[in-house]
Image 1: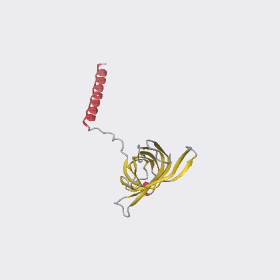
Image 2: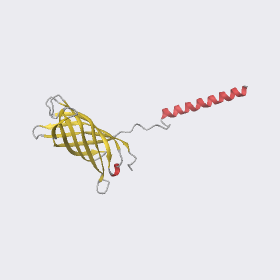
Image 3: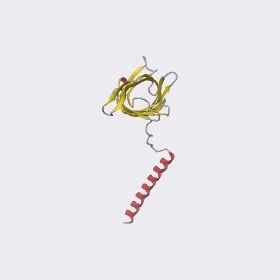
Image 4: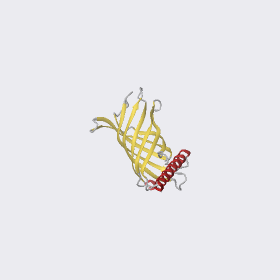
Length: 196
């Protein structure tokens, strides 16, 4: 009977010692650690308005809408290339101290990498899920936020899906009457099995 108690006591000490060693390793950083959450691929956008769209009536939102309000620009960062963005906005015109909503649209991003011969690495494309523009008091600048669906890609990004967010500023230069769009896109690619 004493032998059984001694064995149980020895097992308890071994378990306590193992637990203490694991905790000490965890505190000193020598234990296996889970990597941090991945940071999405950040892309800087500098674009210019190429068309202010076609005015029409959206039967779903029951508002006057600018269909095909489009921008073309350059991207740098994780995916350097040329972005084409076409969106539907309601209300159609900037309203000082007001808000416009993106009610649809599409985008494409051909990507060019310097280390590749020929440069072209493939493209990403998708649709605009939702977005808002909050206009200033003059109606010449708006903070902009969009959620973009990544519907797929070509070549290196064949079969990729996910989403991206865009946050930035839309500005109208009153002298030159040019409209620019600047900001950051952050990509979260979900299905990346195709990427080699």
